[in-house]
Length: 571
Image 1 (cartoon, rainbow, N blue to C red):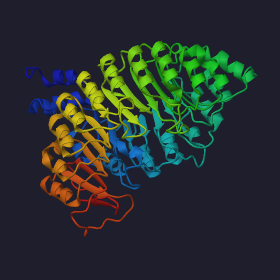
Image 2: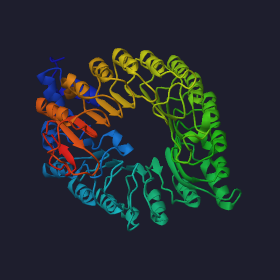
Image 3: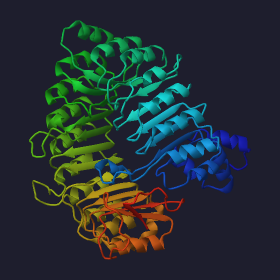
Image 4: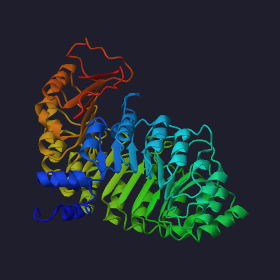
């Protein structure tokens, strides 16, 4: 292909949008590296400390869209101390200083202040898209600056982190002629100015996705839907009203006309008898997110019977095994299922889900390829059946409330069940293990999980061999998270070159010592090795034989970071 002119090659490159494929293209030869460098407009950085913003800007001079991650995924489980880092300000400052024509910024688990958002809004004239997932540190004061100054903004998406609204007027700051296509403020705290919201919707003719917070009442929802029948994705806030009232009747009549809605979420406050109002649009739904909806199992089952086209379902475990049976018989095209733990179900409560519900799903939904499943119990027989029925899993993440619980039918470890998963699902990329497990399951993983990129382990394994099986066998492994397992210095130091091919390693409450961590840092200068224990100040004089409570290792081209707090020891 080198016989083609550069202009032709660049045109071909434009059709390649996958970050993974773009990375591979840049390694083909020097000419492709040069062309791909000058042609790439979208860049993903999985760890904001892995490279400096200046180096990214120099490498990709035509940068338009940037996605950044700060804290790793396990920060969701409160494993990281507060104030650890992940600040986006240095990135925005560098982008602005170098006059990058940034149009999109997608951040996940980062610290974003109102000052950051103010600088962002003033620095990039063509800015169009801001997505903040599980980010902290900002309020609607910063969002007001984005709304007022980014005249071409078409997407504002706030997810998974509560946002304070001290003034309550940020929705009034959008321009008279709005370009919004997607607006999500479901995680916003406090009352919304309903007049400003309805006015914004009315002057946003291209709006396709709208997700409301819990304070938007059913009466306002009816007026919004009347103004925006073109919506495809709808997040409902409060869904409580007296049946057969005038407001409820108006809502039912309005919803019938919303024939474009294919994705539904929200329902933070629900009266089960009101759910029948949305039945008319359920037949077209391909995505349903009820992960924050406290709806009783009986009402959920009635709702799900109308959702025959679902491909993605997020729900809480109060649905029960019976409800999952209904999903299996109704949603034959289901591809992604997430069953989260309900905060109001006790771990010993007979409610919740078990292996029975998962087996029914596997029998009724053969297209399923992504699963997150919080359950009371699991058996080897069930996992073997699931592996046989759904061999296309790319993501299989299972948590048992008791993380060391064996197969309740045979009282054996769950090695054979998870072994069947990795043997049958050859495209598996993400795996989370739970239950009583020995070294044998890690041998299975090392031998069969050839495509595995992320592995999460808790309270599993018997010796250092288990970790070595994984490191030696999983050639594509990028992220490894280990908690409360017996792996020690030998496992950590045996295959240290492997860590330079990975994004990160996390170990907490294992048998690793400070001396081993120092040895790793000395031998591998391109790794940042961080030790910390909640908010305790670092004691550099501690004995090398002392066990480390929390260890975070990640590769970097930027060297040791300069913003680490005093309770983080960077080796």
